[in-house]
Structures are given as C-alpha cells and as structure tokens.
Image (cartoon, rainbow, N blue to C red; front, side):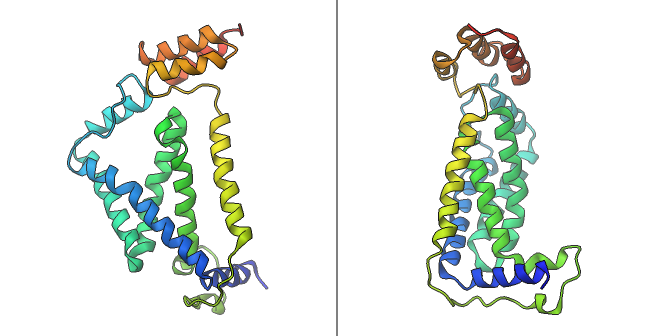
Length: 238
C-alpha cells in the first residue's frame, strides 16, 4: 500500500469521527474571530495599534497604514477569508486565503518579537494547517503525484465513530504548551510595547545596564531592532 493510500485511509477515518469535525468547526470559528475585527479596522481606514513609531512593529504598522488602498485591500482579504471560513461550502477556499496572511503575520511577529501576536499567530498557523488537512480530499489533486483510482473517492462525511481521540487532543494540548514555552524562551530580550515594560525584564538580566540601553535604543533612539540587539550582545555581562 502506497503512502498516499495510507493518507487517504487516515484522512477518511478522521473525517468520520465527530470530535475531529467539532475541532474543525472550532478552528474555523476561532480563526474567523481573529480576522474580522482587525480586517474591518483596515477596511474603514482606522489604525489598530497604539504602538509608538519607534517600536519595530509600530514602525511597520505606521508604514503599512500609509500604503493607502493596499492597507484596505489586506483588510478586505482578511474579512473575506473569515466569512468564507464560516460558510461550510467555502471553508476550504477561506483556509487557502487565510494561510498566507496568517503565516506572514507569524513571521513578522517573530522577527520583531511583538508581544501582541507572538503567541497567538503560531497557534493560528497550526489551526489553519489543521483545516487544510481536514479538507485534504478537496485539494490533493493539485499535488504533483500520480494518484491511484481509489484516492479520488470522497471520504464519508457522516459520523462513523464517537470515540474521543485522547491521543490527538493530548498532542494538541502539548503542542500549544510547547509553542508558548518555545516563544517565551527562544529570545533573550523583547522590545515589549512600552519602554517601562521593556525595562522590567532587565531586573532578571545578567546585563542590566545593557538591557536598559537596549530599551532606550528601541523606544527612545528609534533604532532598528537588529542594531539594538547587536549592541546588547557586544556588551559584557555585569
């Protein structure tokens, strides 16, 4: 049996379990709720942040806001993706539109170490991937592989199992915890949203003065985060 046949069997089995279906519905609702407010804010032409222009994310969002109709366009895409996710017949299209947007937000959040979406965006990417896997039978035909005849069959969407998949949801929980722990510990310093919040982390740093200078570099001198981090790394420990 080929790996693709095994994937089809696994996918069909998952589609027949009501708990996997409930989880797909939950993810669709959660992702839609995440994009509708921020998307509508862009559509009506309002800013959606109180970050100062000196903050790396604030600087980016200021520039983003002044792009004119591009700012509105992204908002329209976000709202469109959210609405499509809420409609069962268009949920797959919504997931495909949603994915590049949330992946971009995730990479951006990690690049500038933005507290606002540092934890949520990776989890939203994973939720989006789950939805794409849930509808694997709809888009697998675009893959550059020859599919067997049996692989063209649409999986049964009815409930064939009510068994709660303990292993799967344990994995979901552990993955969410792992994401939080990794994001919390992967970076030495964070710009935080304000200079006062930034300096609070300096009390536990072995480079207290350098940490304070890092915060000043970001929030007062408005320097790029890479330069501020480079200066911090060059400073010896206390």
